[in-house]
Length: 152
Image (cartoon, rainbow, N blue to C red):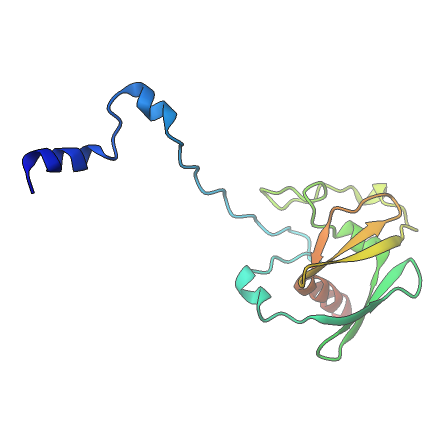
């Protein structure tokens, strides 16, 4: 390889002057990993486990204060609307960096109810609550863990 070719190859990654460095995009650093909330009712589920998760076969709302979920393995769980509202994993309710709960339990009415339920892809439910809150996405593994936590 000729000297001029080596010199060109070595200079490919380095700017020739200060303004050239400013015109190139800066590679963003990887954001810190989200820390799971400290609440015992919320657990972080790694994406690799999402492939093998338990899926619901049906969800039913017999009354607005709870939702009943029938799982593929035959388990049936009922979760209270207020419990779901308090365990909301959205950025307004849980600090994204520390996982610390931001929602004051006293600010959630005892009779908060579920107004609507939407399916999010094939991995979660999104509940709309009577207090207007509707940004939390509750993954199936987290809902199942919440239900199992109530049984213990």
